[in-house]
Length: 482
Image (cartoon, rainbow, N blue to C red):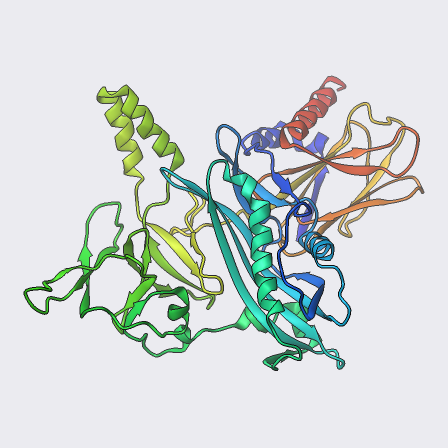
């Protein structure tokens, strides 16, 4: 799953030229340790956190700086370590509380930018397991939580949002009586591997041969396939449109049917509805319009084609066009509107969160996002760093290699679920290791620091701009020495 590349003398300038094309936005790293956790006393005590996310390289993406550049976001330490430390500090051990394992399948954050607003979002999908004397685990509770907060500079809301979705799940856990009512029992192997529990949870809407007809006035009514009675008879109409924006999709209109002169045929507005069904189709009310939901192959989500995703660059062009006016302004505005096409979305069933699946420039033929499949990691030593000390460098069981001053090495990593382990050592001295899941959205740079007075070398994360500068400096020195 990883590959150790040759040292800088063999890589040459082409690789460094390619590095310059990466986004240099500094990753956003944060901790929960200053956040509050308002959960009542509970007969349960979370003593272990298991990270079972499919992608453990980051929590999500944020916008940073004056240019609102995209950057990855993550905890300062691993998810399991961060949550364990947070919960122990906010929920001290209580006498008589029974130990519980929490399995985290999703813990994600995002920023939803629109033309006149922006929001910070967080999502948690997890379950709580009670260890049994025979080494099995009993599923106590499955939770899917989400929160959304708007304002200015919403990046600052992420720590509080993550703490809030944890709080929401813990409050539900505290409400469970002890002893619990048995639901599902998992073997130790299944529990640790992420099988069963919330991972295989299915809802009534998924098992129904046909959806029940009516209005979904809440998300829970949709999951339970138990809609409320509609106010009046209604019908769904598909209106075909041409043009790039609709890209083969239909506009959906829902109308109350006329019953008498006092109640003529009229449009049904989304109002307080989550969605509706006519007994055949299921529609979601999203941003004041109705869109058809379709079950996804993964069994954990539904998809729909919805409104265009806000394009910040295009919006900037429109604003400039409004100021400039004239032919040039019209051209800019036209270019911005030309990308205004319908976009794919996902509805996460466990939590009810709606997520835009489109990511400009990184989509497949159907418009769904495709993430980079390879992370790049660069380890280097400065030219003036303990020149007489040779460092032995190894990576996840690969053969060790010498890393001297004025050298650097590159690795690739393709496993988003398991940590890459890097180790450095001087002579027979103590070994220093760093284990982490690297960022797949941009390169990771680590400086190998050798203490002048002796001791174990360390691997220090550095900003992308600093790391790229040092690699270029090493390359220039290598060329000058030839």
